[in-house]
Amino acid sequence: MRKIQFNKLLLIRLLLITITVIIGIGLGLWQTLPPNPPGLNSQYYPIYKKMLSNIEKFAVEPRPSGSTEIEKTRGQIIAEIEGMGLTPIIDEHVYTLSELADLMISKRDGVTPEEWWEEAGNFYQEIYGSDKINDVYDCFAMDWPFLVNEDGNINLRNILVKLESPGADSAILFVSHYDSVPESPGASDNMLGVCSGLEAMRSQANNTDLKTNIYFLFTDAEENGLLGAYAFITAYPKMKEKIDVVVSMDMGGVSGVVLSDRMSPKAYSLVQMVLKSGARPLLSSLAITVVETFNLSRGDIMAFLDSGYNAISLGATGEKEKNHGPTDTYENMNKATAWHSLQIVLALTDYSANNSLAKINDSSLESVYFPFFPGCNILMTAFSACILSVLACILALIWAMFLIKRRQFIFSFFVIIMCLLIILTITSTIFIISGSYLFSIPLLVMTITVFFNKWKTVYIAASIISGIIVFLLWTPVVYLVFEVIIKPLVI
Image (cartoon, rainbow, N blue to C red; front, side):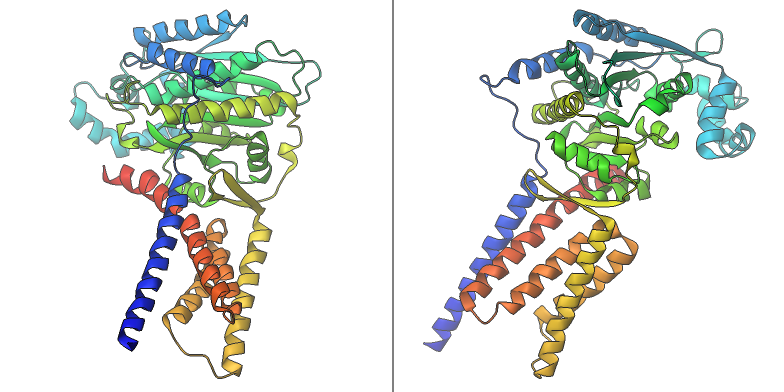
């Protein structure tokens, strides 16, 4: 009878663990899925369909900067803008190869073109032939045959649209690039960002009472080293004083949830703005730390961050291996991801139209933010995250001292896990504050659970809840590490 009873208890425990794991991982994975597209009866359905129609029309074939294809696409984008009753500003910028070398090498890599040539010259000569490559300028000409014209210069054209109101005291800039690499039609990278911006522009085209000036910039030659973004920054130096926030929409992945992969270091007010707007990208300060550490993302936002702008970048996470390839087509693009992109831009645009963003740059708070429950992100200052970590460790140590005093401290699997979490919590608080919540919150929940162990039912319920919370926190992180770091490195 005792053996049968033991087996029943074992089965019940295994069943409870299984349910906890399934619920926790299920809710965690839910956070990594883009929202379902709007139905036929939704007010957003016509906007969504218009965006998809434009992507399908614009992303038919590759459009590298300087090609006839990008000229056609530029004309289509301008026609859409003019159809809204707006007047786009077409900024033409000319770079000499010498200026390009200074921009691409001296400013970005910190070496002179001559030093760069000493390191990379032999490599390029082996690829293209020593008879064709004699200096750094020949490298650019061979790498970008469409971009360099007959005069040996580089001509690119940005498209800028300004929605302004006399009473506005702040400004936001939405940036998307409309060129692609020579091998790809670039539906997700980045016609999705462009067409999302066009629909956000359309939604505010007739608004004469904007609380924030809203600018849309469609850059050329992003794939050639962020040239369009640098050209804009150079041509409009005074815009830095006017623009409070830059939002870079560079999707990259053809599927998956849209997340922020780059952000200004002092991000508290930026994240707060995103959350208040109702936009729901996946926000993770730990993911941004990892992306920055491994330098995994270098879109237009890097030009703005390097120039001191307050900026945030948004991009899709899934199937990045299809990025820059012939499979980045409208047919392969995940339509839920497309809707998520549009939803975010519409929410940010609407919030900016109705609220001043003047105080965003006043914040100097470092922050920790992470997804906690589907549709719910938590934001706290770095100081608050440290306090949380300290509190969790103190409670765990009080529990341990209580057991030692009563001579009940026995090493078990549960105790080992608690000790390990204390060590990881202290370590993460010191070295990786952006990821401290992964250890401090589970430690806090597990410690509180221990104090409930006088009542068996409460203890079981608290154990299940703590397990679910652990998986809720860790599943999105594991997903992001796999999609953003491991897959790009392996494939």
